[in-house]
Image (cartoon, rainbow, N blue to C red; front, side, top):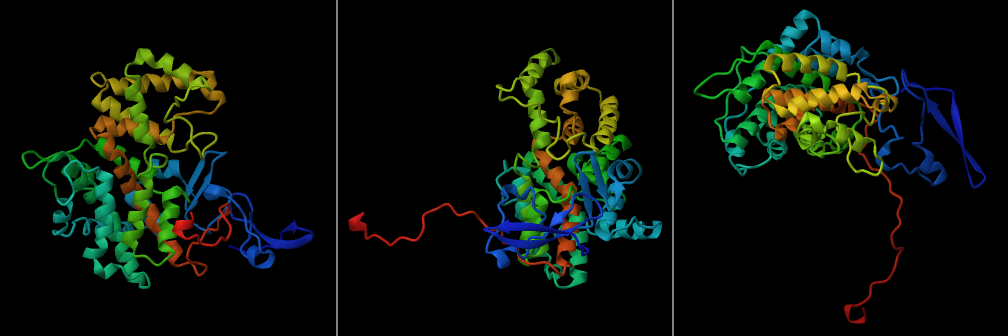
Length: 431
């Protein structure tokens, strides 16, 4: 963070304190309060940290009012439209788009690490057969530190690099195996002659009796889902990864913490909630009823998949995801899928309704990604694991940036204490 001559003055009980103001390359200015507690014996109160910058970063920038999402300065729609997931992974990890030689080397390194340690199959079998795939992913990713001892020393740059590649490479295998285990099918090993997205689809849908060769449209749609979810600045799961890593925890434990946070329905479960809503609606003829309920402030029903907490205008990822959704539905059809019929009609009705236009409640990335995943044949229980797979590179990029930050210190939020003050212990016979 660059120094600046601008300051803010805070007056408390007649005493004034000068606080530095930092100007970022994009976004609002930031008041630096790091020395406030030491100088004034006072600290700030910000539940959810929505008005607090916990770090400085060069990875991702979001302007919710403009509907802008940039990775290392590149707009997300350009990356999703012209690039592919592993190239975006390289960009997030190393700061620049790769040359052809650099990309080939990076893709080769990822491909060579997609296999899991064979003994980890025994770890999967320790879960109940009906275990949620996210429960399996939290456990398996955390357990990687017990299988890959040569990449847990965070003080060693080379071990950090190896851990990064391993996590990106093995996460599709872990997610696919969690899915296979949950449905009682044999686990499918990755293949080195498949691209990243195709490999994942094949591990999910292939069986020993018959191989699976996804249509390139499906592979491209899967790759776009990965790309559009790769990073999203300091969200809850990313902040969790940073907080865990601030203690010096190994990378596998930190990413497992991020997966656990993502599992929350308020974070990673949005596309699953969207599909559940579409199934609740049931048939297209019931859409007007639910549209009216969505407009009624006294009705608890909310139209899931429309609008976004961060984006006050439109979700910049949604346009690209809509293109993929249209391509997938054209390929697979919707005639025999009532959920997808509801989705297509709901999208049309909402986009034409002045109420949603005025409130800027446009379909977001979760609406379209849920449609795509459902059309491909994924159960809703796999939606969040796929989100975790996609976001892994963002978590790792943020983790690596934090480890290399000289200002890094263990996270320790303060509190506004409202409990009892000091009081003496009362013997049990006198209570």
